[in-house]
Length: 321
Image (cartoon, rainbow, N blue to C red; front, side, top):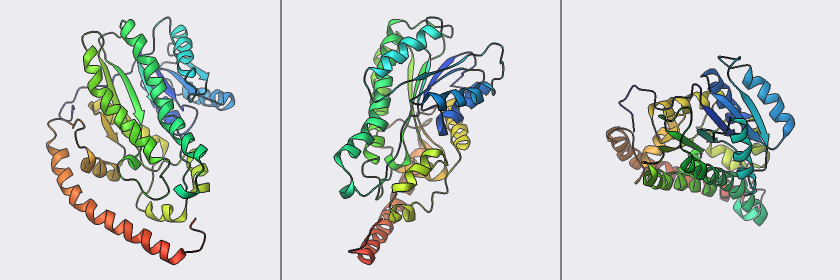
């Protein structure tokens, strides 16, 4: 939506934003960018020391240091009791108003071959990536509906999820991870329609960002367990800095897009996987690109499958990592 519109569909100046996973990586980069655009920013993560360091860096980016406000909350988002506490503390800090914008950036990838993963590791991926975002979104919606009035009442409220291009094209090594990112896309698509029920009460919008490889501390941890075949299949994804992903995400949000990609690979994969998801503008570009990409992806998938088969034959009986 909004592909042919020049108006900023995601104004943040003077508004209050919560960012989960805001102590490092993409979340921190978004927090700095929002501070530069005049937002009040509250970041959430587990580790207090990281939060304190990040908050100093974020507040230093403020365009109006004397009037903008910055805060952090330490919480475990995989615990269902965490998000309601965050909402309560954030609302009190925000002069009795529930923050108008939520970015769900918290998450992690723990790659590995599915057959080698423990059940607890599989469960952890869903909790960290999907449930943490679902719990936060659920906690926000009730107070938004109960008290829709805010200092910026005329502007819509926004939930921004973070998925991955792995939700468009799963590959070997991400079997525990990709389903959690698929689930976020499904939640985003469902809420996009469901929230229309309440439009007369409160205008609420849902968006999802689909980044590829991000050069962050999380990637260093990810690479410790990533199988070599996964690294080979990812060679075409050159990666982006957190700042590049944050900038691309904000541009997409300001254009009013619901499903936002941060690079050429993600854009092409999205076009081929939209299905019944909402499309930008009239959907002409997305639809034509989707036809082309569907043909290309048949070739790409066959090539990737061939690479995996060859890898398996060459390494049969050896360490596949």
